[in-house]
Image (tube, rainbow, N blue to C red):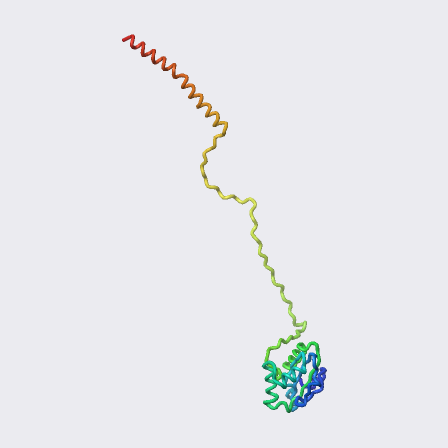
Length: 213
């Protein structure tokens, strides 16, 4: 994969970064940006140094790569351009797209598949590559068995636990208690009525004894 491949994918004509002006860059449009080493054109080694993206390409390139404002990787590119002398031998190209993140990722995946690694100026990171598997080799997955917990059934005719044996005195009915009370009362009255007769008999017996004497 090289710059020629990108031109076939709709990228703009390459412009030397050294002569780049703000007016030729896309202003408020999302883009995928590519930096190319012109000295490697036509060589077996890929001439692509960097594949990036930006919501505003003009701001990203002029304020970031050339002025040095931005994140860690943007400052790294600025250093390579000015401290390592790449400003003299690099070209830049871009492609306008509403899906810059997706397009950048696809290009990075293709580059890594072709060269075994990401472009040298890109931050090293893992890419999730989706591999297509032929339907011939797809194995049918055995559906997992669903284990359902069944609550134990309650036994309808369960034997009740034996209650503790406590002797309880039988309660007397109200009617029975009333009869008992009347009986006791009558007995007492009879005893009181018999007392004078007994006393009279006793006195007569005492008198008869005295006369005999």
